[in-house]
Structure formats: structure tokens, C-alpha cells
Image 1 (cartoon, rainbow, N blue to C red):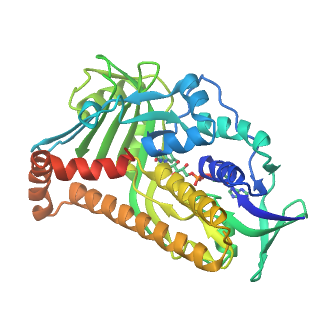
Image 2 (image 1 turned 135 degrees about the vertical axis):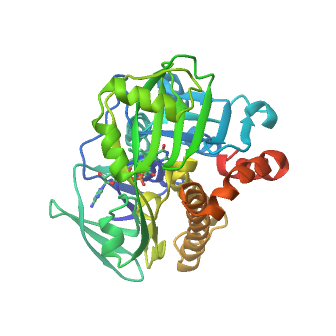
Image 3 (image 1 turned 135 degrees about the horizontal axis):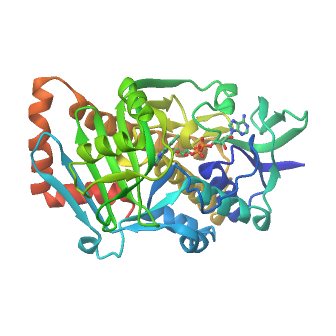
Length: 388
Ligand SMILES: Cc1cc2nc3c(=O)[nH]c(=O)nc-3n(C[C@H](O)[C@H](O)[C@H](O)COP(=O)(O)OP(=O)(O)OC[C@H]3O[C@@H](n4cnc5c(N)ncnc54)[C@H](O)[C@@H]3O)c2cc1C
């Protein structure tokens, strides 16, 4: 049987892609290398996302958002950004946008779990655990060999198999990357004072510290640090870690106490040189890995999915070929350009705020102050980034 699409990778982006394409009436298979994800409330997943409003709407359309919100999603209603070196403070409030929240803080495994639960009722054929190992393609379609020896045939293949994507490599698509020499330290902490449904970010010379409100009253942190500093703070005992974090966060929520184990992940920018090669499309982390300072990693990936589903829906409603090379190329160009602009913008912010260079240091405070005094500009940018 020739399917319409095979999606490699059942992370949040790949699972959402399989569901969205099935929702447009396509015959879809999903291939995932790891065992099926399963969410449990405790312990909470260390990988959480600041989930944007447009992606909540995408998930509503997929029929999974209400279930996610009832399970555990913490709305954040305010955002505060400031620089340790002084200068202004950027403030965003949901009220100013006529909304109840700016977005939600949600765990990766919860999103994955609820997306996977919806796959069978959407008719997605699941191959799990299975890995994509080989690719053949011509003008009509693709053939993918899985590690169980079976083959899948489809009109298109979608690489959503993460930053070290096998399918992207098999398609011959290269990447350009920059290692920031930093790691993001993640974990949960309890503040002395309530988090006030606020997402906080403080820029420090070593990198930004984000403190995000979580549903049980604790906060999830992403602390970007030079790799050796990250290794040092990871090795601290809880009391010493809490003490350093409290200081780094300027005592904004009083004393901070760790309430979970900690982990760290490397920070880098990686952009695929193309998002389509013949009948193979690349999206999510397979296409772009960005600095976490704007919380956009998974949000960009889900926007790739929404754009692809819209392309299919639009082509089918006009009676056109949804998989025509011209349509696939248009999707690839648009998505690649949005991700490249975002990745380089986050990188510029990272460079200005971590540079030892005197000119950059002089720019920092005034930049935030200026942004704070230009509400129409910052609010326009924010509206775009947060999908409001
Ligand atoms: C600790 C941590 C914290 C993060 N925090 C944030 C944050 O706060 N905000 C944010 O927006 N982003 C964050 N990110 C980034 C975010 O996790 C990614 O942008 C997002 O998960 C990408 O989703 P994805 O589905 O594209 O890729 P992945 O989640 O990497 O999923 C890829 C899937 O493909 C599967 N796979 C791999 N190879 C194959 C193969 N050959 N065949 C079949 N399947 C395969 C893998 O098993 C995996 O399930 C964080 C990342 C980490 C590691």
C-alpha cells in the first residue's frame, strides 16, 4: 500500500504532524524509535515548554488541548525580563492583550502522551519501536526501510526525528551549527514567595536565568551557563545550589529551594540547509535548534506543522495536488526563513548579553530600557513570538 505520508519521529512535533496530516484526510504512518511515552504526575518532567497561544489553538484542533489543560498546564499571565547589569525592565501582561494568559507552561511528556493517545482514533499507523534506516526516493514518492526489515512507501516522508535526524542525513540535507559552549541547567525549585503566574527572566553575564511558574506552586528553571559553570552548579548540594540560585535570581521570589533532581542540556544553534529535498521534508528540531532564551524551540516546530497542514488543506479544497513539488518548496522556503530569522535574533540577544566586549556591555541596559519605552514595538514583537 502507498501511504500519503510517513513521519519519522514521534516527539511532540512528529506526533502533532502525524495527527494534523491525518486530520486533513491523509493516510499517515508514524515511526518512533523509542517506546511509547507515558506521563505520570510525579515526578514532573524536567523538560517543560512555554507553550504559545497559536499552538494551543493547533492542539485544540487536534482534539487534545482540553485534556492537557485538565491534566496539568500552568497559565502564565505576566512576563518580567531584566538585566543584572541594571537598566530597564520589560513587562508583558495578558490584560494588555485582552487575554487571560500569555501562554502555558507544559511538560514535554504530557504533550506527547496525549498526542499519542489520539493517534489510533485518527487512523495513524504506528510503527514503534522502529527506526528509519534507509531511504529511496524518486519523483513519485519515497520508500523507507525500517530496522525490522519492513518497507514503507509514501508520497512524502517527514523528518521529525530530532536534532540528530537520521532521515535528514539520508536525504542528504546538511546543517550549519554553532555550539554556544553553554548548557541549560533545568530543575524545579520552590520560592519563598508565590510565583504570581509570572514567567521571569534575568540576564546575567553567564547567560539568562528563566524561572517559570509551575502548576503545583513550584517553579521550573532553565539556567544558561558556560559549560564548566553548569558542571559546577550541577555538582553542588541542594543547600549550596539554592543559595547560588537565590542570588542569581536577585531574591525576586525570596530564598529558592531545589525540590527535584537537576539536569543540563547543551545549547547550540543548528539550522538545516534546506527544509525539503525532493519528497523529504524536515521540521521541528530536525530542521532547527535554537537558543532557549525565548522559549521558542517547540513552538517553531509546531508552526512548521500548522503551515504544512494548512498547505494540504488548502490544496485539497481547491482540488489541487497537495504534494506538488512547487507547494512543498514554497512551504520549505517560508518555514526556513522564519526559523533562520528567529534563530539569529535569539543568537544576537545571547551575544549582546554574554559578551565581555565593552560596547556590548554598554548596550545592554539601555536596550531593555529602550524596549520598555517603546511599547508598540515590543508588544508587536511579543505578539508575533507568542502567537497571540
Ligand atoms: C532539557 C531540555 C529542555 C528544553 N526546554 C525547552 C523549553 O523550555 N522551551 C522550548 O521551546 N524548547 C525546549 N527544549 C527544546 C525542545 O525540547 C525541542 O525543541 C522539542 O522537543 C523538539 O521536538 P521534536 O519533536 O522536533 O524533537 P524530539 O523531541 O527530539 O523528538 C524526536 C523523536 O524522534 C525519535 N527518533 C530519533 N531517531 C529516529 C529514527 N531514526 N527513526 C524514528 N524515530 C527516531 C526520537 O526517539 C524522538 O522521540 C528543551 C530541550 C531539552 C533537551
